[in-house]
Image (cartoon, rainbow over all chains, first blue to last red; front, side):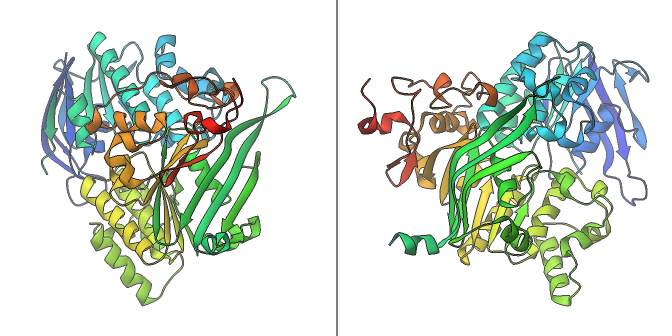
Length: 200
Length: 320
């Protein structure tokens, strides 16, 4: 499968400049592409557009030549930069996880999620603990591409390398294409098969 | 002598224990979950002290304890001293925001309905403060127009810079920064570190909570290592130049997990509070596990730092 961004331009409403201007980008199944750019250059915005959360001002996103499905499970899933803002604060973690459509028990265990945490509210977990739920939630069986937006900065080094090792293996066995957004050059060198610069 | 040393300390936390009261599911049985136990931290004048450790080990809770931000069901015991005086709740209320400044971890700590400039100024209207803010904007590469924007209009890294500026605007004695540089690119993060260093060099203190060990080591004087709610080791930054100088097996595992030192993932996870092992919390994953790991483990001073590991406390071991 191929996820493709064609001439993506994006301007925030009320703004007078394009945060993304004619971006071309593509990722194949099984590929792991790193995106490196300074803060505020539109990395997250591009991720949101790739995953269908935002509609580009111009240009299109194609999945094997077709636009992203408008309904049902989106094969392009995103893991967000701030886990505390990516979960509904008023539902317990069990329901947060259930949003992800058939998450295998195996994944939950591999990510080190404790049974006890399922009965808690998001405010009762640490940043790193929340992010494990967000990663699990994005790994439903229909996921073909995964956008990882600074997903490991809230994790300690050991957990970071555990979770990345798990994600890389998972992506490989299920042929999931990964787009990895990060400021950490060392991390990108470790996990990515190639790099894409986001030219201004 | 001990008295003199204490005076130069800005913050000292001894034997801190924090637990949360919870109810067992579908019962009225109340249980106490200890999330921090027997934790020691100190920050002296002129020091940047880094706190590193596993996620969920209580690093943010430590910051919240110092600022009195814990939820109602938390109970705290242990001693906290600020500039040699016992820090009571009413002192915290008085000092926070003026002498104690917090850079919180979550960008959700910004007021979503207030323009960023107003939040950074925090009620100040004088020309000096405005000028200071403008200088900070230039230093951290934000356009002046950002002051007129709301938090939702900022990118992750920009919001992080705003949180940092809010702390740098006031003139505190101690800054507690909880993951201040996540989402910032390397040059910005380096600037933030320089600012912390400069701030400490003026006779203040910084408690820098972070996962970015490499970055922290560029400015920190000491590194305190947390695991499962307790302190395992206190090391000097120089000890990290060579992994063999590190004392605790967990710190060594952390060192080897750095991308430049092998990216090695130690198997296993940090024990959950409900099934905390007796003795050393790291023992179930420890490659050097042996006799005495499940007993009481004292803190031992070793080579200018300290460590909580039986291998260094052989003399006080009970007969096995």
